[in-house]
Amino acid sequence: MNYIKIAFLSIVTVALLAMVPFHNTTEDHNHNKDIVELASETDALSTLFAAIDAAGLAETLQSEGPFTVFAPTNEAFAALPDGTLESLLLEENRELLVEILTYHVVPGKVMSGDLSDGMYAETVQGSSVTISIGNYGVSVDDASVVEADIEASNGVVHVIDSVILPQQDDSSGY
Image: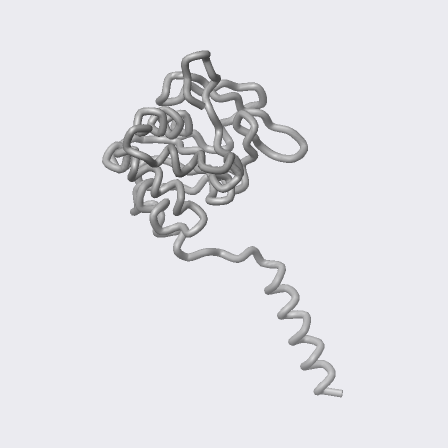
């Protein structure tokens, strides 16, 4: 009988522990890392880090800020039409890459709690992104936020599932 009680208590304890949210202890150390360091150390953001480096934006995004970065995942970059990413990473397309990446950056530190449905946020690029809040979460333009409020020493990162692009005019290359 004691064996059954011990087994039952063990199962209940394990079940209760499984319900407690996993706490990533490295998250506590993010406050000491700038946005570029976070991107460079996050596997899912390695393409973004490569693009930041190719655009020559690393030094800027390591400065004091604060910045809010809507960070596309590797899958978001992979979803671009074939050859697009490779083309953007070429030196001759650096200006276009800078324009696209700076469209993902908002001056200041904007946490998810600061957002409201239908709000506009002016980007470093100069255009505004539209924030939508609905039953399925938060979106920036047409990208969904998949992870929010990753704090860095110089701002905050919100991971998104698509690469967002500024409105096109007839002379743009994208």
